Length: 443
Image (tube, rainbow, N blue to C red; front, top):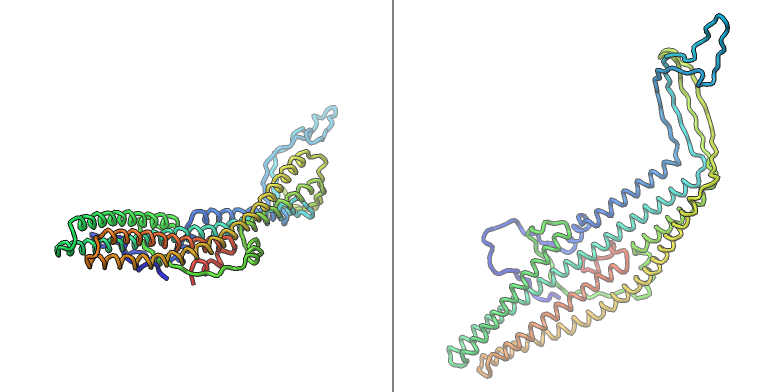
């Protein structure tokens, strides 16, 4: 049920036609926020970065091949190569430096790591880190949905305040007209007219303040979802009460951790650390690789001799003190993640219980506030009729208007709290991006 009919935020007409106004629904605002908000964009770049890291780690386990074609113009010291040529009497001997000469070598080489447990574990760790980055991106998107819903709700609430303020201005204007008519008929006094003028001026000031506040909320909303703050914007929806049947507490608690992206991210980070610890253990294990090359070598392009080699290499680390420090670092990070996971499990339960309590309480508040609003409207009607009939002065009417203003304010607050509690529950339950529609009143 809508609180009040829609009205324009400002009564004065614009001096000249401007660009068309964008009527924004909550669903459109969320979609814009998910596309353009900086938090989501940055989280997306971290996923891409993690993908690149995983690909680089994987490449260490794959074959590597390359082609080389050097042309070498050189001289060679035979003595440096360990070749000693004796000299004889009457013979000057051969030179100790031979050359220069030109050598061509066209060669293809390849290598393959056959067994490297450390690089393998590091690759598995990077895969889990990539998953953690994806979960962080999803958590960022869920948080943006919650924040956009909150900003949109704040704008709806501010718009409802404008509507309520405008209705009070209309009531005060009607009271002033009635007071003048009564005064002209000799039924009311001048103080009744003056009192009605003061009330109208007060309500007009409240309308100006409410209108400015509503425009400010639209600026904040536009900026958050990537729109120009100066773009003409109005809400396509009004503040409404939408009853919601929440899931049972036990069901909500059981499914929340499986659907909460922030919790899943911590789990993936922990799995990545476990793989890094295994990689640290593997630093002392042997690594086996194989490689080879084949090509042609010769002194001219037309004369090559085919040569090649095949080799295998076994590598073992005999002493590496750095491993102890690395292990302490990883153990400390693992303990920190375990503490975060334990704290988040408690936090998720608290958020769900709190959202359910707020939802029930706000629903009761809405019911009571709407009943009070109806009574205040009746009170104002009766007071106005008594003043029109000359049974009393307009103090009763102004008092009834103040009561109606408080009832309108309480109704807006109650509706806002109820809608906000639904949005908070949607975030607390997890899988927010998939399931937020029913909680935010979106079909």
